[in-house]
Length: 124
Image 1 (cartoon, helix red, strand yellow):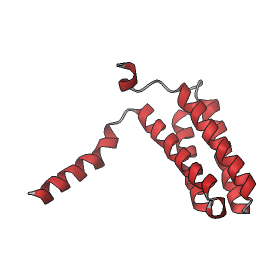
Image 2 (tube, rainbow, N blue to C red):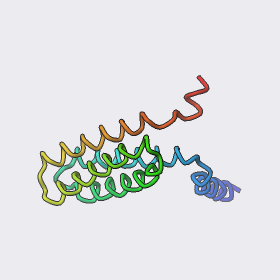
Image 3 (cartoon, rainbow, N blue to C red):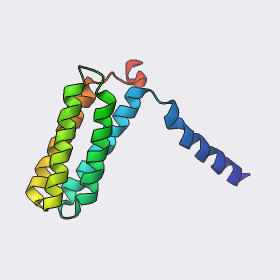
């Protein structure tokens, strides 16, 4: 019985993202890019994998907002910042990794501010 409940919960959680609104998917990609950039900033000596992941999530978010003229510049700026983070991580420049990670965080927050508020925020 317990195992069936765990399997059912796992199945529901696996299917839940497919029902999310497009803006929620963009916001999730932004938060994932921000999280990877934070880890890269905290551990610049081993930031390559995190920088690659941040760039991947930033690129995906940029692709999702490319159709919106209001969001497109923010998406491109985020992609450029994440690519700068990736370059700094490959060159193993700790100060540059930190600076680029901060730039990614700033760009994430700027783009997030342009997205419509989630329904729960509008209900208050």
